[in-house]
Length: 116
Length: 306
Ligand SMILES: Cc1ncc(C[n+]2csc(CCOP(=O)(O)OP(=O)(O)O)c2C)c(N)n1
Ligand code: SF4
Ligand code: SF4
Ligand code: SF4
Ligand SMILES: [Mg+2]
Image: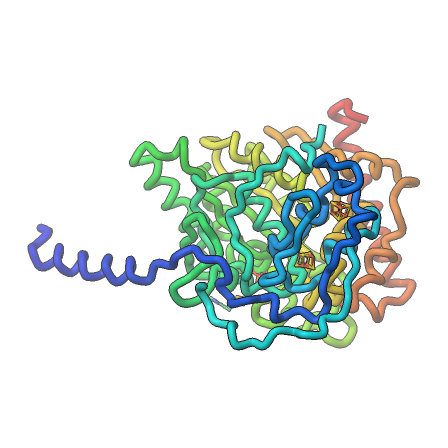
């Protein structure tokens, strides 16, 4: 069976339509997931191991956060745009330096659109 | 030596703001697996919660290429992608990963997986095991453990013990097999690095015990703690089989000694799927753990490692 001009055109059309379904990597694919939060993590610097020692050591909060919303910096900083408030970081912090407080002003869901 | 947290790489391959539930264990596993494998990775992914993670519409939080396939075909798909890379002489630099749930592995994908393993197709197969069909609303799978309530085992919980996938994969004589858990990202990171080094040596199988707050009924903040408890009770041994040789991983080593194992009730009582348990149910679990370690112990002894 030979590959005709028409076959090639057909294949090109199919591959173009496959390529057009390609997705672009973007932060906030599900919108500002910080709007999901009912509890909010806050850091008590005076209890945090890396703040107290000034050395990069512990960072378990950074390692365990499912949402990649804690930075590996001194002090660790939360990304409230995307932190879902699960509390895993607070639960795993060896010195209870992270406290979960009720989220009073849960931002409106207006910004909850994908791909920003 | 376990890698230090400060020595783990900074680069992320999943971007924040994903569709996964708050406190999802799968997200911890996925994040650290991709961090270990790096940018030259192609993921093949069947229907599951991890597919939803890939995003809808024109955007995705995942920075490496992900290709979706039909539920039962992930191993066949990954075999094809890795063969294509080999034909293009790109198989050394690019690693192929089949990333599937327990439903996609233990049940619907097992035939394809077994075939790929026997053919020595070249990719890493990952089963993140959250012990049910979570994405469609917590239906029982053959990975669901004894007694667990699911939406299809709603009254007394599952009456059967789960399939032993680890042994099934061992029977295929793979070059590398490992178990991981969401409570131990450093251990997981190192195992994925190792699996990558076995590139060219057929299928490498990694199974991750993956916590799931809505499916297991533990608190959202306990996604790490719960699988730590699973390991500490001896229920989920972290281990590897490297070219046929069994190696118990560091976090699980001390639990070879039965007296060091913590009460499995601590693990079970954190989760509402086991809330109805009676003393008899707890006994089934205790026996399961005893039998598991008896067998592992025999093997370690035979190898001269005990
Ligand atoms: C052939 C086929 N049957 C059923 C489905 C519906 N389906 C989509 S995801 C899913 C559950 C997958 O369970 P698992 O592999 O354990 O992954 P999890 O959702 O738990 O992460 C099911 C049944 C499908 N997509 N294709
Ligand atoms: S672990 Fe949970 S609560 Fe803590 S920063 Fe991450 S998303 Fe927020
Ligand atoms: S886990 Fe706690 S002590 Fe460690 S770096 Fe994070 S906040 Fe500081
Ligand atoms: S149902 Fe479970 S596995 Fe699926 S996204 Fe939610 S927490 Fe993760
Ligand atoms: Mg599942």
